[in-house]
Image 1 (cartoon, one colour):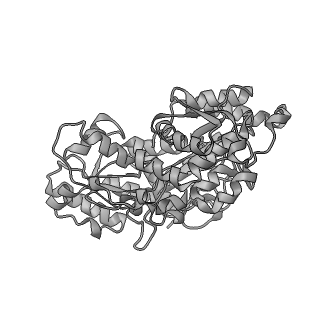
Image 2 (cartoon, helix red, strand yellow):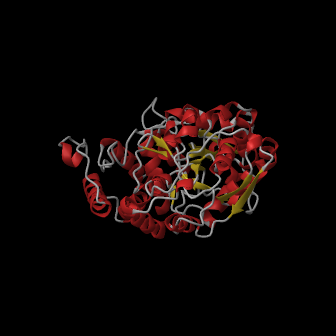
Image 3 (tube, one colour):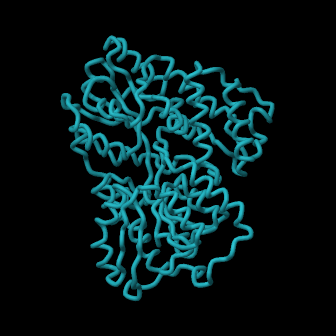
Length: 454
């Protein structure tokens, strides 16, 4: 999971906006009008959408189909990634200059919602709640109101090199838990005489892996009231698995998405890559760009913490919002509704650009259910969609992005300093979050409840 380089600047801007929201001048009346569902022939005008990279290309690809339904709406998809978050935050703060529709990561949504500069979509979007997993719907809401619609979700599994597993006697079908996975990794390292590691797990990968394990264990960073709850049995179990992974000698320390990490797709240095559904596109697109033999790729479900436990987690997804300053909200909503709340458009996103649908009806389409030749005919989409609605909802306050930064720093320091005991790690991290975020510690925290961590 890659964090934007503009995170610190945008966090400062968000903080300033949240602090001043109580005395901010209300938007002009025409900007506060609710969004309505109007017949396609009645809608007209221009809609500007800010997006980036593959997402922008996917939106452009569905425009011909959108315009068959809405012939008088002209959508302009602006593909940009340069300081996108900062520019959007500045436009929200100024009250001018924002796009009509903004494509953003769902982990960013809570802090933008807190600015009170996003349109309340409840009248038109609430009816779609049951069509999306709660894990991606909830970050788009606040106090019962809907401010965004999920686009994609990122269920995780393990990509592995079937030829290497076969060479070293590993049966992926027998890997059920993380203990099984670690044992298989140790066998691969031993039989390859240390030439092949089981997975990459550098310092910048620790927080995403920790977050994944916390989800599988039904843990939380915060409780339902927004209080710090990271010092829990579930989070300690997640840290314990991280410790066992690194202590077992099966991890490569290559940084995620570095040249060595990507080159590993085509050599024998790394046997498997736990990752999100969108990583399939990276593997397919990148494997041929590096020298090495052709690799026989397959996928198996994420290992569980315990036998019979949850075997899926969400790396993060994206959503779309409409700023309050948008002057053509009905047309902007029509585009969001078509792009995100129809099976045809959502399946096209996946078919064309491997953007996995958050819209549940789209998971039944041929694009998602069909066999994937690259993965030996496996029904990859079906595998990733298994138990998608069982992924727990993470409580994400407006300070979520800052929190991820502090947890990442703490985990990097923990690993670099020899992985000290849990009490020291969680005590220091909890105190850091309490001081830096100005949030209370949950009474359920092990430091407050008096419960044993054993």
